Image (cartoon, rainbow, N blue to C red):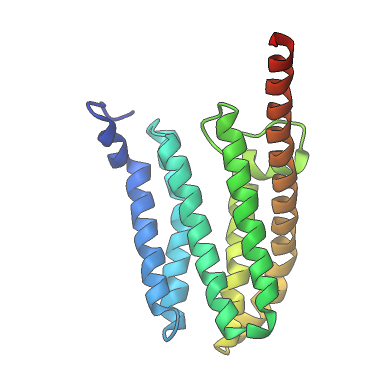
Length: 214
């Protein structure tokens, strides 16, 4: 099932994209409640993460997967995560450099990966080759992707809740989610390295062709 397209703007009204807009709204609301309302923030952030699985499901079910939707999904995830880390810089200023490095790694790895995939003619940043088993498992196994992304977000939320003196959902969850969070950072490094190689290989091949023609 898919909507009949009459104009390019019709893509904006695809079901998964509509879910994406609601995710953007919940992210903005969580920013507004983050300072004084940790419970509301936790609920809003939970909705944001929960709906991340449904936009992909809707895209597959209704045959409405789009480049715009793929970028919207990734950008929403990155903005939500990085905005939360920005707040962690405020409440944990002694770890500010660590948070800055995490922001830089997250942003650079996902941007370079997305750019490398799209310049290679692929419709989504989730289309990876079979050579890199870590990324292949991470992006092609939906259960692994959902769990890793969810627990990664839970780690940052738990750090936030720990500051607000939540024990089980804060302090304990930080330690429980830490191994998966570490895995996600390793995946980001691998993703960054892989994207760099893809772009370098494309540059090399283009220059090799030009050198033969000249």
